Amino acid sequence: MKKLTLARSSAVLLCLGIGVAGSEALAQYAPTSRAPDTVRAQLEAQQKAAAQTAQAYRDMDNATLLTKLMEQSAAKREPFNSPAYRELQGRHDVNSASLVSSVRQTDNGNALLPLLLLRKLDEKTYLALPANLRATVLTDALRGAVMFSMQLRGADFRGRKVAINVPGAFPEFLLTLILDKYGMTVKDVDETTLGFPQQIIALQNKAIDVAIPPEPFAATAIGQGSGALIVPEEAVGSGEITTMVFFSGRFLRERPDVGKRFLRAIVRAARETQGNYNKNPELGALLAHATMLKPEAVEKSVATAFDRDLDIAKFEASVRHQETVYMKIGRLDYATPLPMDRMVDASLVHQAAASMN
Image (tube, rainbow, N blue to C red; front, side, top):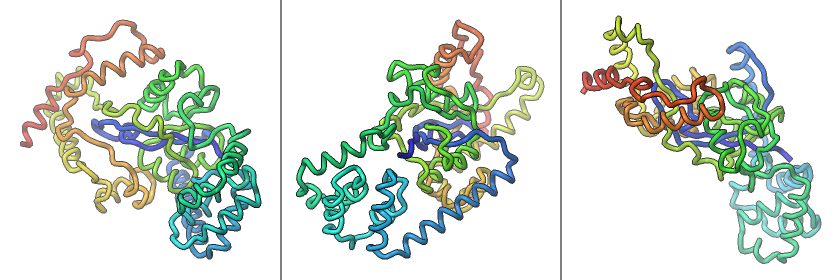
């Protein structure tokens, strides 16, 4: 049975400037280091293959799809990873009697997908099935399953391979928060470093169990059926600041006007990316080019939230929280929290935002 993932989010949605987090995550992939053109080509090939598969299933009649559904159910595929299930769940003319017949004739875990599809499309008929039959199918399907998307949570990460983009970055912060809920640390999982674009490619390879990629990569993996949202952990990190702009002390002293002009440009971008900006065709095309994904994937993703003025002073509590977590896991080389005025200088961004009002 396919292992799961966390899924997308505004928090994991790593972005330029200062982003505010929501959260989610994804899973399964193999570490690799590839040139951008190679990664783009592989992503495009995967997206094309996924689109062709989806179209092929759309062209099938219900009888053929139900046959495919039983085959994929017997192969222990989960709903999100079954093309037949994904196609049938959107149809309104599926014969409930055929699903009931498949469940009754199989009478074990191999009937999981038709049973779940029946529950989704015709709950009344689903509830009319004997409770012991439903229980038999569900328990048999879960028996021996390492992970199952309907119940996976952070507590199941112990000993599993979890991918982050780089040690000490925001995905590792989120991972630490999730593990802490269940009395674990990053030492209790097999932490693997892998770039975000490669994560989507590697989801197909089942080389890891969990990943925390940003949007629009998460939406792409979910859309391709290679990953699914781990619902119990989707809100972890909500409201946290994800990315900042750094200037050296010397730069601030000697070239503050250049820094201010740079921040004006960033603030302008933040003001143009409010709300569901990823559904704006022009902005969507820019994001698609930068992330090496298709515009459709960008449009379906969860947009990262940006403070309109990129006022980092509003997020000092988040900065302190992240400092505390990074000290705890050994990513910082000091043990006493720094004064906030040594970590955050909002003067230039305040000036930049004020000059645009």
